[in-house]
Image 1 (cartoon, one colour):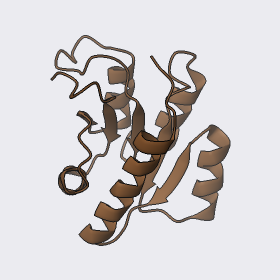
Image 2 (spheres, rainbow, N blue to C red):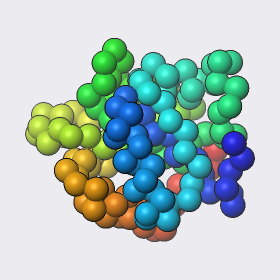
Image 3 (cartoon, helix red, strand yellow):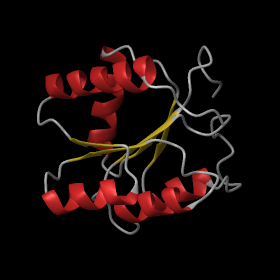
Image 4 (tube, rainbow, N blue to C red):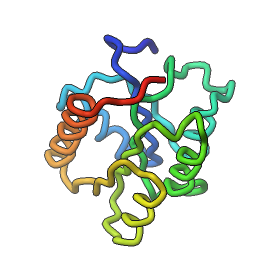
Length: 148
C-alpha cells in the first residue's frame, strides 16, 4: 500500500474487529486520508515496528502516529507503549492512547511512560467521528511531527 499524497501512515493497534471497523468508518467520515496499518495485538505492533519479515505488505516508512488500545490480551497497550518509548529508533513517534478506560491510574501511568495523549473512546459513532476529527486537526494540522 503506497502512502497517499505523502501523508504519514497511522499505526492502529486494536484487538477488537468491531472497534477497528468503527475506527476506519470514522476516519472516512472525518476525511482522515492517511494510510492505515492495522495491528491486532501488541505483539503484532512490535513486530511491525521492528520490521519483521512477515509484514511484507507493510507501509513504507515509520508511522507518523500510533493509535493504541490499552486493554488487549497478551502484550497489552501498556507493554507496547513501554516498548515504543524505550527504543531509540521508535521513541519519537507520538503515541495516542485510545481506550475505553478512564481509570486515573491508567492515565497517570501512560503519561509517565511517554504517551503523547490519552483519549477515552467515545461510546457512540458520532462521538468517535468528532474525536477522530480532533485527532486529525491536531496531529496532522497543527502539530509538527518528527521526520523518519
